[in-house]
Image (cartoon, rainbow, N blue to C red; front, side, top):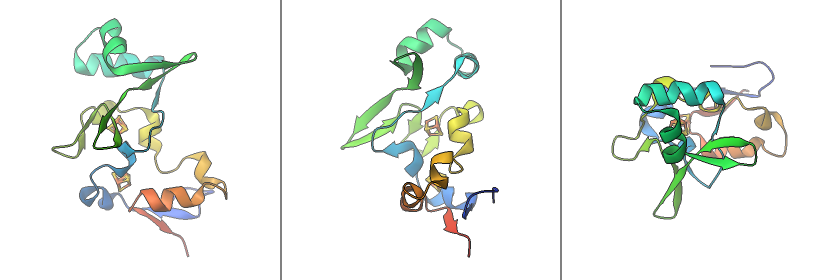
Amino acid sequence: MKREGFDFYFDPAACGNCCGACCRGESGFIWVNKEEISKIARFLNIDIENFIKSYLKKVKYRFSLKEIKVAGENICIFFDLKSCRCEIYPVRPSQCVSYPFWDRYREEKHKNEVFEECPGVKRLL
Ligand code: SF4
Ligand code: SF4
């Protein structure tokens, strides 16, 4: 899978042997907008107020999915360590859908991060 403006391609087959390196590790933000909040709450069959309370953290005026700490790692609250799967995969936030084609990985100073994190990312020759 290629995307214009990126000097790498992505092989989704790598996800099968990876156990969610992009869903765990250093602490970060997994942003969700209003529509995504409604969609995920509907998928989980809980009301929005409870969803926000249980699964989101407020960061200034935005919301991010909570993380949990396991053995020194920060893990997205929806990542199931036993199955190595995202529990909300069909309605995961657009930030997750667009990974690894994030604008920051076009920048020289951040480029190496994606090669280090994602085994499915390969340099275009
Ligand atoms: S880090 Fe890359 S290979 Fe691993 S699950 Fe995420 S997208 Fe797939
Ligand atoms: S929502 Fe799913 S795909 Fe996104 S970080 Fe969490 S576990 Fe990973």
